[in-house]
Length: 158
Ligand SMILES: Cc1cc2nc3c(=O)[nH]c(=O)nc-3n(C[C@H](O)[C@H](O)[C@H](O)COP(=O)(O)O)c2cc1C
Image: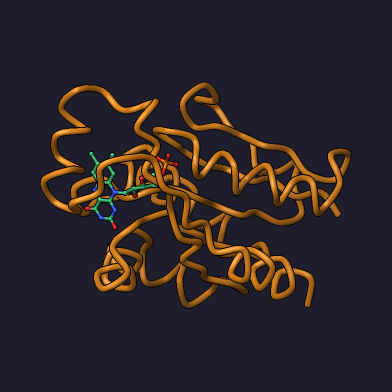
């Protein structure tokens, strides 16, 4: 079974989770497709699809939204997983619900909020300023939720 993990990542968290999924499924069974560099993705080559993105200022990347909307019919015909990186635990579910269309959330075998990170080394001046102001965090912190990553893998395999 060939899996496509389609994702967008600003500072590497979602990419890291995508890499964990690939490692678990086996590199030969799982392709990582970064929406930053892959502009034309043919899902016909894959048996199932896992989509991941992250939240900045309340929203998932527009590339992820565009990909979902453009491929809605194909995605509804395949086993699907959805995951999201974000740091605001209180807003996480609401952000997830707004990130992915309802029709895909209902169809998905697995929907997971996989935690997030603040990676100060990869943030620009303004991003650091915003993160310090909004979250009060002063340095890099990793809160990737490994349990949720494992649940995603388990539910996709079921
Ligand atoms: C400028 C900035 C704004 C952010 N805004 C939000 C937000 O509105 N809600 C949230 O839950 N997390 C927010 N985050 C946290 C990101 O979702 C988190 O850093 C995530 O791990 C990023 O994943 P990525 O590196 O794959 O893009 C923000 C992070 C940055 C740097």
